Image 1: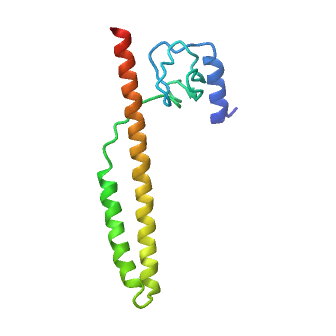
Image 2 (image 1 turned 30 degrees about the horizontal axis):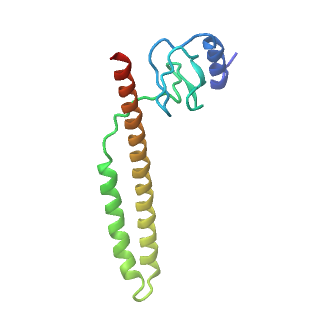
Image 3 (image 1 turned 180 degrees about the horizontal axis):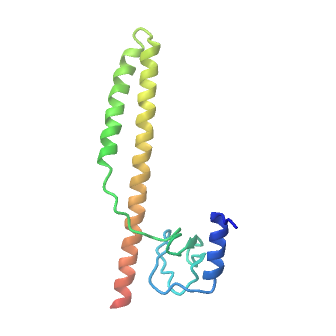
Length: 142
Protein backbone atom coordinates (compact mmCIF):
# COMPACT_ATOMS: atom_id res chain seq x y z
CA UNK A 1 0.00 0.00 0.00
CA UNK A 2 1.37 3.38 -1.02
CA UNK A 3 0.56 6.52 0.98
CA UNK A 4 0.64 10.00 -0.47
CA UNK A 5 2.02 12.99 1.41
CA UNK A 6 -1.52 14.17 2.25
CA UNK A 7 -2.36 10.73 3.67
CA UNK A 8 0.75 10.78 5.86
CA UNK A 9 -0.03 14.32 7.05
CA UNK A 10 -3.59 13.32 7.92
CA UNK A 11 -2.36 10.23 9.83
CA UNK A 12 0.20 12.34 11.71
CA UNK A 13 -2.50 14.91 12.54
CA UNK A 14 -4.72 12.13 13.87
CA UNK A 15 -1.86 10.77 16.00
CA UNK A 16 -0.95 14.23 17.34
CA UNK A 17 -4.58 15.36 17.73
CA UNK A 18 -4.64 14.94 21.51
CA UNK A 19 -0.99 15.81 22.11
CA UNK A 20 -0.08 19.30 23.26
CA UNK A 21 2.93 21.50 22.63
CA UNK A 22 5.17 21.26 25.70
CA UNK A 23 7.79 23.93 24.92
CA UNK A 24 7.61 27.56 23.95
CA UNK A 25 6.61 27.79 20.28
CA UNK A 26 5.41 31.09 18.86
CA UNK A 27 2.90 32.01 16.17
CA UNK A 28 4.58 33.19 12.98
CA UNK A 29 2.03 35.96 12.49
CA UNK A 30 1.57 37.60 15.90
CA UNK A 31 4.16 36.01 18.24
CA UNK A 32 1.62 34.42 20.60
CA UNK A 33 3.06 31.59 22.73
CA UNK A 34 1.37 28.36 21.57
CA UNK A 35 2.51 26.30 24.58
CA UNK A 36 -0.15 23.81 25.80
CA UNK A 37 -2.13 24.08 22.52
CA UNK A 38 -2.56 21.16 20.09
CA UNK A 39 0.19 20.52 17.54
CA UNK A 40 -2.04 21.48 14.64
CA UNK A 41 -4.63 24.18 15.28
CA UNK A 42 -5.30 27.92 14.93
CA UNK A 43 -3.64 30.67 16.91
CA UNK A 44 -6.16 31.96 19.47
CA UNK A 45 -4.73 35.48 19.14
CA UNK A 46 -4.83 36.07 15.37
CA UNK A 47 -6.55 32.98 13.93
CA UNK A 48 -3.68 31.88 11.64
CA UNK A 49 -3.47 28.13 11.18
CA UNK A 50 -0.24 26.51 12.36
CA UNK A 51 1.32 23.08 12.46
CA UNK A 52 4.03 22.59 15.07
CA UNK A 53 4.96 19.01 14.24
CA UNK A 54 8.77 18.91 13.97
CA UNK A 55 8.90 17.73 10.35
CA UNK A 56 6.00 19.83 9.09
CA UNK A 57 6.38 23.25 10.72
CA UNK A 58 4.08 25.85 9.18
CA UNK A 59 2.82 29.10 10.65
CA UNK A 60 5.45 28.93 13.40
CA UNK A 61 7.91 31.77 14.08
CA UNK A 62 11.45 30.79 13.26
CA UNK A 63 13.98 33.63 13.42
CA UNK A 64 15.52 34.40 10.03
CA UNK A 65 19.25 34.29 9.55
CA UNK A 66 19.07 36.32 6.36
CA UNK A 67 21.50 39.10 5.70
CA UNK A 68 20.64 42.46 4.21
CA UNK A 69 20.21 41.93 0.42
CA UNK A 70 23.22 43.95 -0.76
CA UNK A 71 23.80 41.63 -3.73
CA UNK A 72 20.23 42.11 -4.92
CA UNK A 73 20.54 45.89 -4.66
CA UNK A 74 23.72 45.80 -6.73
CA UNK A 75 21.96 43.56 -9.27
CA UNK A 76 19.06 45.98 -9.51
CA UNK A 77 21.42 48.89 -10.15
CA UNK A 78 23.33 46.84 -12.73
CA UNK A 79 20.02 46.14 -14.54
CA UNK A 80 18.70 49.69 -14.32
CA UNK A 81 21.84 51.36 -15.72
CA UNK A 82 21.71 49.60 -19.11
CA UNK A 83 17.93 50.11 -19.15
CA UNK A 84 18.51 53.85 -18.91
CA UNK A 85 21.30 53.75 -21.48
CA UNK A 86 19.20 51.84 -23.99
CA UNK A 87 16.13 53.98 -23.31
CA UNK A 88 18.12 57.20 -23.85
CA UNK A 89 19.14 56.14 -27.35
CA UNK A 90 15.93 54.40 -28.33
CA UNK A 91 13.88 57.42 -29.31
CA UNK A 92 16.35 59.66 -31.24
CA UNK A 93 15.59 58.32 -33.94
CA UNK A 94 13.25 55.48 -33.03
CA UNK A 95 15.25 52.28 -32.57
CA UNK A 96 13.10 49.26 -31.81
CA UNK A 97 16.04 47.08 -30.79
CA UNK A 98 17.22 49.58 -28.18
CA UNK A 99 13.65 50.03 -26.90
CA UNK A 100 13.29 46.24 -26.53
CA UNK A 101 16.64 46.04 -24.74
CA UNK A 102 15.58 48.84 -22.39
CA UNK A 103 12.31 47.06 -21.70
CA UNK A 104 14.06 43.76 -20.91
CA UNK A 105 16.57 45.36 -18.56
CA UNK A 106 13.85 47.44 -16.93
CA UNK A 107 11.67 44.37 -16.38
CA UNK A 108 14.58 42.43 -14.86
CA UNK A 109 15.40 45.38 -12.61
CA UNK A 110 11.80 45.69 -11.44
CA UNK A 111 11.63 41.98 -10.62
CA UNK A 112 14.79 42.30 -8.55
CA UNK A 113 13.39 45.38 -6.76
CA UNK A 114 10.27 43.36 -5.92
CA UNK A 115 12.44 40.55 -4.50
CA UNK A 116 14.31 43.12 -2.39
CA UNK A 117 11.01 44.54 -1.11
CA UNK A 118 9.71 41.06 -0.14
CA UNK A 119 12.96 40.14 1.64
CA UNK A 120 13.08 43.39 3.58
CA UNK A 121 9.42 43.02 4.53
CA UNK A 122 10.01 39.43 5.73
CA UNK A 123 13.11 40.51 7.68
CA UNK A 124 11.20 43.37 9.36
CA UNK A 125 8.30 41.08 10.28
CA UNK A 126 10.66 38.48 11.75
CA UNK A 127 12.50 41.15 13.74
CA UNK A 128 9.21 42.57 15.04
CA UNK A 129 8.01 39.13 16.21
CA UNK A 130 11.42 38.38 17.77
CA UNK A 131 11.31 41.69 19.69
CA UNK A 132 7.76 40.95 20.86
CA UNK A 133 8.81 37.50 22.07
CA UNK A 134 11.87 38.87 23.87
CA UNK A 135 9.79 41.58 25.57
CA UNK A 136 7.10 39.10 26.65
CA UNK A 137 9.71 36.69 28.03
CA UNK A 138 11.39 39.51 29.96
CA UNK A 139 8.02 40.56 31.36
CA UNK A 140 7.17 37.05 32.60
CA UNK A 141 10.59 36.42 34.15
CA UNK A 142 10.70 39.58 36.26
